Length: 93
Image 1 (spheres, rainbow, N blue to C red):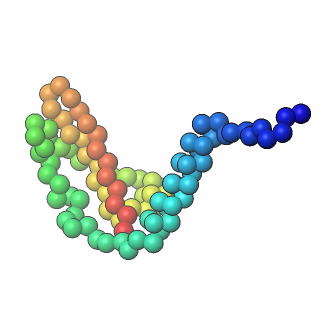
Image 2 (cartoon, rainbow, N blue to C red; image 1 turned 90 degrees about the horizontal axis):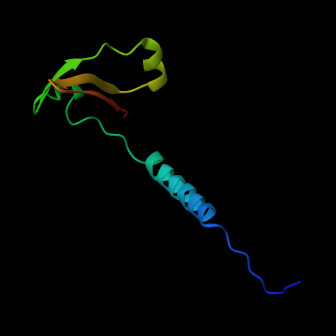
Image 3 (cartoon, helix red, strand yellow; image 1 turned 90 degrees about the vertical axis):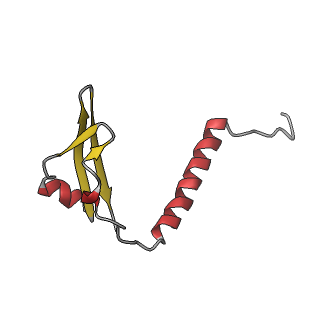
């Protein structure tokens, strides 16, 4: 039996503990912040961005809105001839 042998934690355990600690600290910081209204409504975001033309997506269903509970949201598809990008932004105050 060896005396004075010291075991060390594997790096992935240390990394996981560090991530959990950071997440807990961040969640406490976020929980104490004061919510503020949007500076401008989301629907004021331009429908034309660079070469992309935006088209409104269908409204979210009542069930989705009940689960998300956003203060405001924007759902659009921006398209240009060779590419399409779906954009969803939800704001919570």
